[in-house]
Image (tube, rainbow, N blue to C red):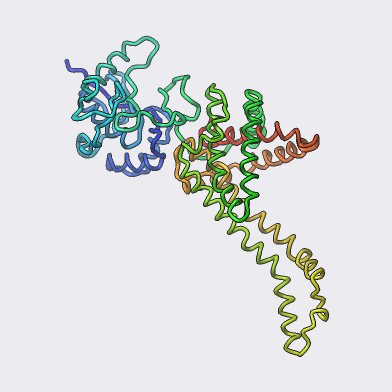
Length: 431
C-alpha cells in the first residue's frame, strides 16, 4: 500500500517574511479570509494543513507553503491524526515560477532544483522528503516526520536570529516562537522585567558594559556634529538597539553576547530599522510644534502691543518693557513650563510607538510602520506594568548616578536588557 503523508505547519514563520505578509500570502493561496488564516499563523503551535497526500503532492505543498512564508514539515499519516483540513478550494498545483538558478535543495542546500530534481547532488526532492519522513518516524527520540528545509522555496542561509525550531525542541532559540501579538500582563511584571534584565547583565557584565559604552559613544559623537549629526544619530539608533536586542536573544538562547551585536542590526533589516528612526524623528518634530508655539506666544503678544504703540506714534520698546532681559523672562515665565509639559505629554505616544519597534523589526521581521503600531498597542495594554517599571527605572538611574555615575554602568545595561525581556513577555508570552 502506498504511503500517505500530511503537511503540518510547525507554528513558526520563515525568517524572510513578516507575520502579516505570511497571512496575506496563505489567505490568497487557500482562497480564504485573512481572519481565518491569522488564527492559524499566529497560533504558535503545530497545525495540520493537508492530509492523505502522496509524496509528490506533499512536496508541492511544502514548496508552495514555504514560499508563502510558513515553516512546514511532512509527516506520515497515522490513524490517530487530528486534522485541520485547510484544503484549497481548487487543487494546489506546483508553483511554476522557478528562479533562474532553481529552488534550493532540501538535502545539500544548493540552489539548483529544476523540475523536482537537484542538479548538484541528483536527489529527487519528493522521494527525499518521503524517505526522510519515514526515517523520522522510526528515529529514536524524534517526533515523526521531517522538518521542511527552511530554504526549500526560500533561503537556506536566512538569518539565524529567526531560525525555526522543531515543535517541542529545547534547542530552538527563544525568539523563534510565533508572534502572538501584544497581550496584557500583571503590573508586577514591571519589576520582573528589571530583575531578569539584571540576570542578562550578570551573565556577561564586561561585554554589556562595553556595548553600552560603545552605543553611548556613537550617539554622542554623532550628536556633536553640527546640523546633521543629531538627525543621523536618531536614524541609526534603532539599528544599534536592534543589534542589542539580537544580543539579548542570543543570551536567552544560551549563546554569548559579543561586541559584534552592537552592529548586528546593520546586516539584519537595516533599512527597515532606519525607517523606524525616520518615523520616530517625524513624531518628535510633530510633538515639538505645539510646544514651540506656546513658547513663542508671549513674544508675539508683546510684539503686537509694540505695533499698536507704533501706530500711536510711540514705538519706544522701553515703554513696553521690551528689553531683552524682560522679554526672556516673559518667555520663560509664561510659556516655557507649559510648553515643556505639552511636549512631554505628546512625546509619550511617540515613545510608546518606538519602544518595541527595533525588537519587532530585528527579531520578528515586521515592517517599520507595523512594528510601531504593535509597539504602541503593547504599551497601551500594559500601562500599569510600565508605570511600575518607569518608577523603578528612574529610582535606579538616580541611585546609579550618585557615585560619580559609576552605578550607571550596571543600571543602563540592565534596563536595555529589560527591554528585551518585556518584549518577550508582551509579544511572545515568555516573561
